[in-house]
Length: 281
Image (cartoon, rainbow, N blue to C red; front, side):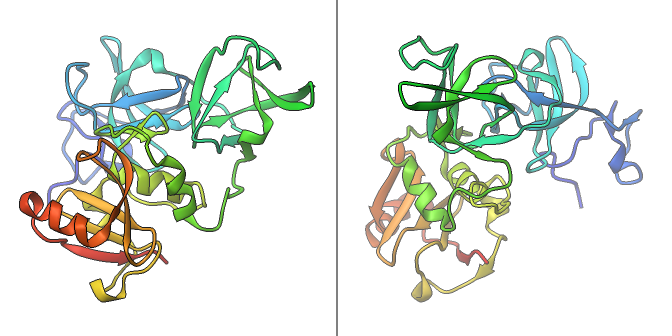
């Protein structure tokens, strides 16, 4: 069986050392550790900015770099194993993050002062390294190793879940713009919403909807309840309750709530009926 190129780093000239004996390549390398230094880094199947994106990596997420050429780096994300190309300038030396951003979007200020013009914005799920804290007019800030300050209430220590119920996290993204391949508070797609919300409660999930269709345990349509996943060909949604589907979708071009039965009827003309239902342990 041919290996999935999304999750396995191999080309005729080069492949990940872990794939030795599974694929043919002129050279095998272990790769070097690095991390994302931009707020969001789009990962593409080819080193070409004109190509559509497969997924996105968030600030501070770690990768393994297998090749650098013509301004692009060929990497594999440590979080979910996704492989692709991104501009080399979007990665830097590996660091040990201390905290994760929990607000859907938050600003990085040049100092502990919200009246200053922000340097950039970070998405929920981004990783940062905190080296100190400060307080201005009663608002507490964390100071970043790379420079700048973020609102302390928008961060949690790495490894500490922001909630027990991942659906409550997913609902925070309602009205976030839909973006094919998006995986951030700036733009998100259907499977990105599922993966990111689960990540924030300490659960790992595959990236794409076809991968997620084998995640968890199968259930029947009649048994659907809060937190269950509903799949169509190329699409996934989250049941907020027995009657409401939460999903990032190209119909509203947002992450939105929709009556489940109405969604099944609306989606059916193009993608037919749901292909499966899964419950996350």
